Image (tube, each protein chain N blue to C red):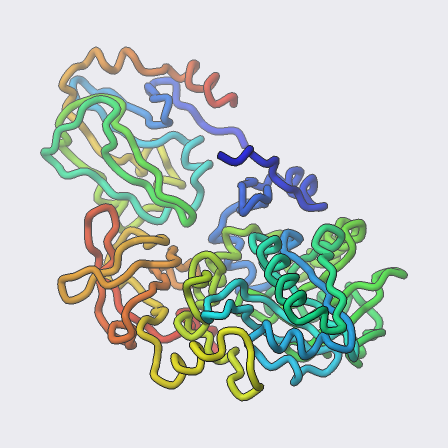
Length: 128
Length: 381
């Protein structure tokens, strides 16, 4: 199955995407990841105000079959979480790059984003 | 460390691969967990019909003048109640009443029986049965493990009877008298012609829906699967993976060996005492099972439903009540039929009553749940 990879986003090897807007980053999981998980039934989001380092386990996404950890691609303070996922976790399947976002962070170190994969590198990683 | 064994594959492996199935390691077998979406596959079985590869399951034939008495010693249900062409769910227990396996036993002829056992238990079952047979001095019984030469598929769902009648247009020629597969009663077994080949068909399943299980020699299973899919298109037939098989059986509270049942758990504790026939004479584990049936077991298998917004329960999560840990979940998932977290848990008997409030611990958080009547899912009439 082919999957969508928006050119303007950065990606972690562990399939999270990052959209940067100044010092605020929005994070979700890639189309490829949601296709692999299928049937997302629950998303456990971090607390607003909590701080995490790049690569920390920050959330959990559950499909019918398994629970999978989500790692934040960059460090910072959580400033907003997507509460719409509490009632409608399937948004992650339906629109992984839009309504299916997980949380927003104020980056503690913007240069961390430079270490992430660009769309082309991510595409090569997943072999799509 | 044990050397890593290559995964076993069923005769349908390449068909699953071509269908784009996600294949996973399931008890030493490389099996399709899902072809598309577990939720869609689950609902397809509840609404229309699905076909499952269950070739990993084991088959053992037990024949001879002593077969009936031997099986009645090693199994908990009363096998003397079976006429040729009938089957029963039954449990094989050790001397302490712990479950070695749960299985289906069919009487295929006057002195012939067929056991359908769990894939993960084939070696242990055979070792146990052989040692039991030896201590019984052979008992005029011939036993054969046919697991490597036989394959099986399940066709389950409300549309399965008309599909089976199309697939097998003639009558049963051995065992049961039935003009067509849909004439089989629940737990009946017949032999129907597929072309010129004989295929065993039973009206059984593991989904809670009307359905059939078909046992055939390995070389026939691919043409059977392909013909079923071709004929089944009009009935909504889709291939179903083990993921949906698990959610379907969990909604029905059917035990899965290794989860609800193991050698330290008796059928009474697992809530399947109905299949323990204490009135049939002596059998393995009878003393323990009789006293548990009389006095009630100390622990029970409770079915539960999450009551609030919650992460899905999964096996081996802690169960709490009255401020303390009281047990552990054995199975758990989101119910695709009801869209709520459900599961089964071993708890002390006093906490297994319907409407008992419990909490399930999921990643250090506790979520409220309530003990419910089995089965968790009931079809609307």
